[in-house]
Image 1 (spheres, rainbow, N blue to C red):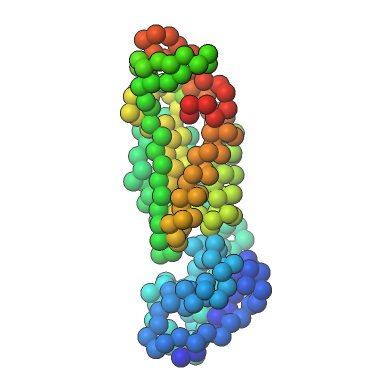
Image 2 (tube, helix red, strand yellow; image 1 turned 90 degrees about the vertical axis):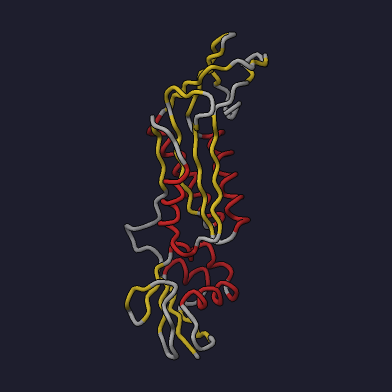
Length: 232
């Protein structure tokens, strides 16, 4: 059967065309059309997780059954509805399950891989003079919160631009004991490679760019860790 695919805005620019005729087997679903388009136009892949689907000018999902002669429209977010990553600075416990649910909801059925990172407080560290301590009791995190949110948002949007990743980042401040999470990151993408890359990029960039400091309290002393990226 033959269907017509209409592309708009960023999708149109990525494919360098606004209309495509696709030949598909009888019984194909909308997701089969997306897979065929991705193979034919790899540049559109990063936009697909945030694209809405319409058949015969009615919104639907990837499991919609297609028929010969159907018009399938792929619609990027409209002006004012662009992708906004979930970013927070909190004083409460961080768990991954809510973050996973958030990115799954944002990426929809395009999620083929979800990679997560949880940074936790450990019992050993080095102070600013390089002396090793294995008697850490707790840490205290401080942040320039508004700037931290802004920088983490930029990092998440960069991951979206690079890998089409939907990323959520939460950083905790205040007093944290051994084993408690200081930062949680979740990255969802259609394929596993991109999810690993996006998650690693987010934590490495966070360590370098986000204004968060920690004070380590051990039985043997107390010190601030202020060097960008050190021991975070």
